Image (cartoon, rainbow, N blue to C red; front, top):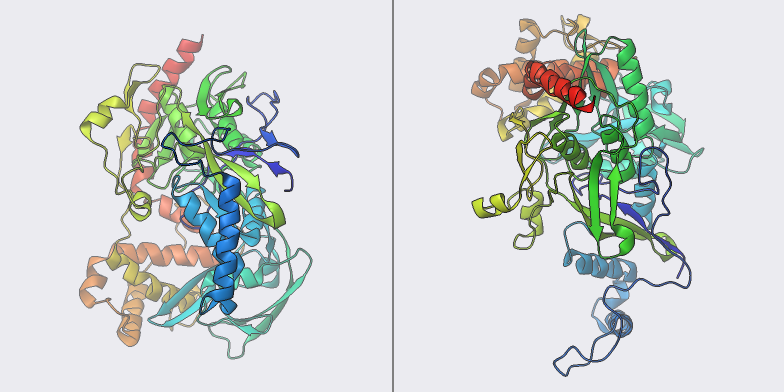
Amino acid sequence: MKNALYISVLLALVLSGVVPAQEASAQRTDGEEVEPFRISRGQSFSASPGGQGDRGDGVPRYSATQALVDYKEALDVVLRNHVSGNEADPEKLTKLAIETMLSTLDPHSSYFDPREYSELLAEQRSEYFGIGASIANFGYGEDLSTYIVATFEGSPAYVAGLRFGDRIVEVDGLRVVGRNSLIVRNRVRGPIGSEVTIVVERAGVDKRLTYKLRRKRVPQPSIPDHYMLDETVGYVDLSAGFNYTTKDELDRALSDLARSGMRSLILDLRDNTGGILEQAVHVAGKFLPRGSRILSQRGRSPFDNRDWDSGTKTPVGIPLIVLVNEETASASEIVAGALQDHDRALIVGTRTFGKGLVQSVIDLPHGAGMTLTSAKYYTPSGRLIQRDYSNVGLYDYYRHKSIITESQDQKHKKETAGGRTVFGGDGIRPDQTVEAFELNERRLSLLDPLFFFSRDLSAGQISGLDSYRVFRQTSYSGSGSDREFLISPEVLNAFKDYVSTVRPEGVTEALLVEEESFIKARLRYNLYVAAYGTESGKRILNDTDPQVRVALDLLPKARQMASKKVAAQK
């Protein structure tokens, strides 16, 4: 078997494009190196204590070697004798067998086939090879197609002029209309330097457009955006996981914001499903003085028993608020938990996912890989934030259906450094709970018609509304509070006329009246994305986001907390 490399990780959740969280070699943030847990040639990894004999009931112990022999024999029998055995794919059967085995252990141990494993490693490097475009499926009923939503500045797609609303018809001669956007994405991506030919249909253009693009390395930053919410409040969007570049990205963002006059900070960890553990330690350590405990890791192997402390001599001391939600998980929960336990930040939003398990990433022969739970982690106050998964199905676990009882609550009760009561066993509970803007089924039914109307509007196809036309995507430096693309009554009336023509399912006149505020906000968001890209659109949403608004209101409280922390360190 080829050399297997174990890297301790905090696995990002398998919700959409999951990236396990992985721990590199350093145990402190000051550069002190610690040899990672490795399994070299000649070594072995046993899932049970050594030794043979029986199980104590007279039945001989069933060894791993015997199990593998039986599996190989069973697979051979299936392929030779099953009525459809000649059509069966042994790779798929084996993958399913491994996935089923791992699913009986815990919700976060996973197997990746060679393609999936390659993508996982690329995402951890904060990159992939492609054209640099964000795509999504839109359509009515069965008429589903993949459309360009935005391009990344400087990417092949951006330079070529692909734009919001372009309908992808063909990729390298293959018709992709009606196919899932993930399938289209995989066709568009490929080896660096290779060519891909994409045919699109554009609103307002009679003939199809053909683009020949050369694939490049496309960055996938952990911090897609940072900017000033007002003259003194900085905002860092750390929503895209913790990858190898996260520490450097945060350093650059904070330096940039400091030059812009930042005196307090909102760190957004919403929808951050995890990433590399070492990078999460760096992020938490950025705001905690040297020697402050960030987490403790406890596992079966001595290599998995370690404590992680801040190595920062001069931490950032400005008032800090951290935004979290139910998709904040794993490595991002470590950051939130450490800052909460040290009374360094106010946590605002909704309860986090509750994943307190550490995975090891293991290279398997022939390019595949797996993640195996090898340890648990605890916050500085001693909280294990992992939710109970012993009596709940996988679907309910990922849909947050597990319920913690009052007695369990008291069992996980801890105190912060300043004496505040906090709880474990079920994620990180915010200091201030604020519900997010709800994207319910009624609003979801509006997304497709809003997209298609925005496609026509931004292409100058709506009579009398030429001022909303977008000729091509450009860079953006606004804050989201500027006055561009304000939605006029004329635009709303045009949208209502559009809906009456296409008659999308579930969209009624009453719904259009009740959801007018949502419609205006989403139209403006779409126009900003068309003109400036996805991050500008998020700035527009942040301008009316209830959690961001409450965070701004709580800055005086965060300021008091930061002042006490500074005084305690003197």
